Structures are given as C-alpha cells and as structure tokens.
Image (cartoon, rainbow, N blue to C red; front, side, top):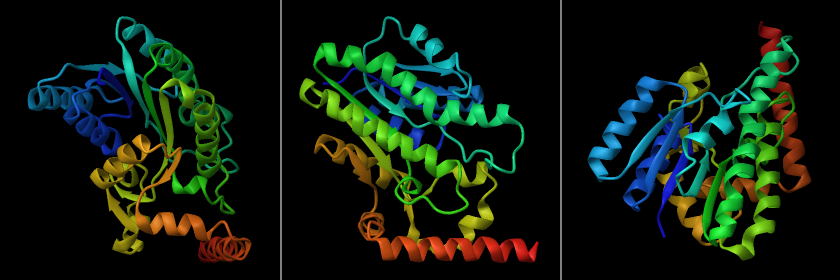
Length: 263
C-alpha cells in the first residue's frame, strides 16, 4: 500500500536515500529541508527519474512552528509513511552558554519529532495502515561521558518510538527507531567532523543505501529498535554487559582528559 512518504532532512544523506528507495517502492514524496536549493534539486531529480509526485517544503525544524507549517502544506495529502530524519550534532550542553541555542537543538532533535508523530500517526491509525521511522543513532545505545546532548537526545527518540509502537502495533501501523552507526553521508562534513571521520577505520563505516535498505526491511519484520550493520548489532549486544560499558566509559573519559591536556 503506497501513498505519500513525508521525509524530513531530505536534501542529502540518509533523508535523500530514504526518498530514493521509497520512490522506487511507488510512494509519492513530500520532502522537507532547510536548504531550498538542495531541496528543489532533489525534487526535480526524483520526480523525473521515478515519475512520481514530489513536493518540496522548506522548513527548519528547530522552529517550533515548523511541524504545523508542514501539516498545513499537506492538509489534502494522505501521509502513509513518515521518516523523521532531520538532525544535527548540536551544541555542547556545558560549553555553549546561550540557552536559546540549546532550546533550538532540543526542538530539532526531540520536540519536532514528537510533534510530527502527534500530527500524522492518528490518521494512519484511522486508515489502518502507516509506517514511521524515527532516525536515532548508536549514540543512543551507549551514553558516554562527555556526551551531554546528542546521545541523550537520540535516546529519547528510541524511547518515544518504543512507546508509540506499543500503542499502535495492533492497528496496522509499524514504528521503528533506526540506530545507525558511522554512515557515509554529509553529516560529518556539515558538522565539521572530518578529522574525526578520517581517524576512524573504514570497517566502522556503512554506506547510506545499505543503512536505509536494512531499515526498511527490518521495519516490515516488526523490528522496533534496529541497529543497522552487522558490526553494530554485535556491538549493541556487547555494550549491554556492565564490564563492557565500564571499559568504554573509562576509555572515553581518559581520551577527553588527554585532549584537554594537549590543549
């Protein structure tokens, strides 16, 4: 059963890959992003390549009014698939002293996602069909010392998805929290993290098309929390053990101390 897939953060990276793979499945698309030029280019390419209806909604989900703006733009559209993908690395909770920047991050990473679920899932329930993927992160599975914003925000995404999935599972709506590990996208470039990316071995990195393909398949199999990539599924199981968690925490704390000493 197709319909329209609403995808946030859709102008690049995982969002654009979700748009591509859902277009192949026959979904029309409603793509949301901040950058109008990149968004319009994606709309033109996808509509021409797949012969589907693709609409562009320019919105910044750090703005509390953005979810309602999206709803109004889609008032006459049957949204049957929602991909909440928009996000950023965000400010350090302790170092960034402008609280408005912290609130904008919370709005983008958590509140807007909950708001869009609130707006679009009830209609899916009424129709007896719907699919939702909330993009979280492996950072949600292991909160590390020094990560006081990104990991905790992504943990909320997992908890939200699990709660919603339990509420609607018997009503034809499937919900998943996708937890990717390191993925080849523009995220690290946009977040000025290329040094970090280059310092990590290639085997830790997965291509976006693999992550999305695995996610969509797992969603249909009823996987509510899904870690993409075999390596990360093994890692996820390992970090459930307290000794492993302690060792990783210790390693991160020592790494932070070493960086501070060098600076």
